[in-house]
Image (tube, rainbow, N blue to C red):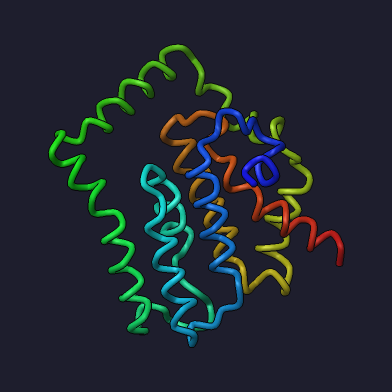
Length: 194
């Protein structure tokens, strides 16, 4: 499934958990904005806690607006229950990290320092255009921000913009944004089809 979703952007270098989590969060948020069904809200909470190693997907989702345009999820008791379940799912990882003095941060810091010193992060922004179908994802951004039909999904556009800006400021590798493109490509296809 990851290959089908991520086939155009170096799938061999992308972590399956990360990419499927981001796509899952985006799909769940766009699947009708109805928060009346408790099972849908619980699914949102559980999927929000799914990324064990993919903290950026949660940050990108939060920066892009963990909000829905039509209803306030935070007022619903099932949203809080889903968040509690997500925290329970994530708790063992947090306990392990605390017992090992958050060793993952040291490991990631050393990898990032190596990548920056070797110049692997210099081409982050140009590679966003060359490693993807740029015309289609730019059309997706246009759909989200300019078309009336895309107004309901505008939070997905802001999710992409916020995550891209955070990755650019952090001197990220070019493939880190790969999970963000399915939602843009789909919007570009819908927008160009109308």
